[in-house]
Length: 201
Image (tube, rainbow, N blue to C red):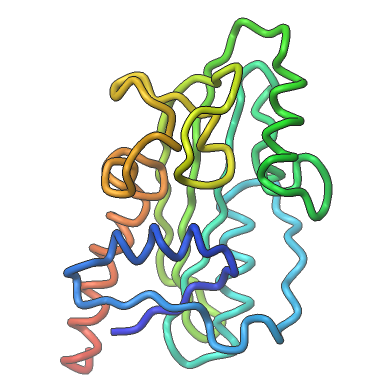
């Protein structure tokens, strides 16, 4: 069963593909995604933005699509960057720019607890059919560590493993991450969905 991802983020596709290995599900980019004008993300929560994207893109195919909205919530910044995580340093900000802006804001801050949040929504032909949410708690480092992952991973320290997310293998990160938790729930739903589709129910 093929499920289309409504994102151009290759890091997300890699993690979602890893999560679905052995499940009989194949995650691919939505065909023609680059030619489709993206929807305006007007939500104030991860759930609202993920739903907007999934419902919007599901109208361009008859297959099931999934979209996620994820980001970093920093307690000392009252939950910022939150839903603006990808654009924290500006509309077309790079990961390095976003990390730099965050480090600058947190330079004199000792209270460094934070969490990653991911909401994944599945939709079909204009209707939302499933929502899953995952979170993981950690602290912010004062400088980047590790070469893996993407986004804020080099700054996000995960105490149980005593490493940043960028220092974890893909498999290690998947077991504990916000996206891994949300995907585990989503995969459970997709297996049931595929079974119902095969039996025409």
